[in-house]
Image (cartoon, rainbow, N blue to C red; front, side, top):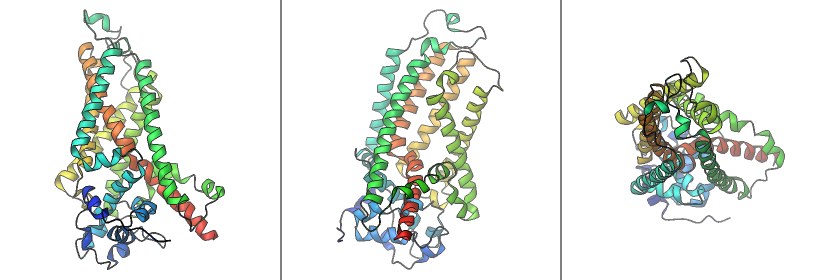
Length: 379
């Protein structure tokens, strides 16, 4: 089958953060040094070749960029400074935009202005909803306080209203992400006529999805110097998933009018998740700011947007919690509004269309790679 050359691939990849990757003359050094290379995944040489040749359709079918964890060894040892590791990162951004049928990912990744406008518009929309469906704590402050001195937050913004909005948002984000993953499946599996995957192959590999989503265990094959990066990344993901689960799944328990003791699970889970998030934010900010690691030397504008939004989300959450347990109703109301105006745009943009979508695409790429290998062996 003939492959169609797209002359715009090189220009596109530059918009997604690619550097001097065209300097590559295929010496094979990156493939030789990468600890994740095997017979089926030639890191990152195959992907570079497809990009250089402008084979957009082949890039769509290629699982290799998702199997790379960007330890940076290939870029550090490249004799031509072709930045193969950064190209793999740029290819992942590019692939996200190709899977996304809405076109939003492409706009987010290629336009700082669009990303900023999208954040502001969503924040204003959230503000309008919040003001219209909540009650400002006017009048005597004491009537907004419970017996334990904490703010009666559900008298202002009842958890049922917030929970309904959470569920609608989660449903929309899931719809976009799932349909994009179906698009990914179509190009990687269904469109590949060289191999036929049967239903048993899909079942055999199902365990890989939760395994790699939770642990990112392939990282363990990388150099020891990368392990700290993986541990911090794991803490960040645990903190994020814990907080997201409590808010979307158990908001009635989490958003309570009662001020529990410090050691109560409701507060402990929140504090632990907050500490994990802050550790991740500080670590990744410091690395990107100082460019200490190979995978932090070239930061895309979406990398910074994600860190800033996540930091502000955590900060406003902490302030809201402090004002609530300290009996300050007006400040609680205002910081809750600010918290939602930052958290919702972050989730709406990052989960299906940008940075956080990696958490879904990578396990599915590993899953698709595994079941295709099963089918190849049977063939």
